[in-house]
Length: 88
Image (cartoon, rainbow, N blue to C red):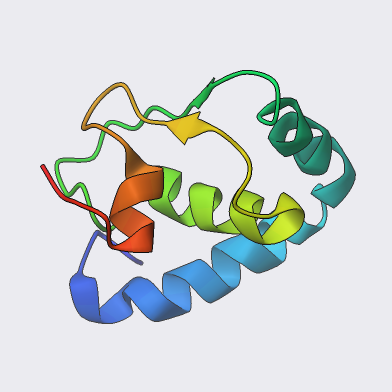
């Protein structure tokens, strides 16, 4: 239903975060590992701003805070993009 349509993005994130919340414990462990090493999120969508990796990053940052080192090999550093520090 989302289809990477930007006006559906907010609702997609709400639904996806609700789904991810059922896996909070293992996802928190992954995010916590990001304090010690880089976590790379990959995605196949053409839209770099509206995809599951961006939504997952947002969820992980909210789970453990911004000290987690997260990157995205496909389009650059999503962490910087979400914080407004830069875009590719």
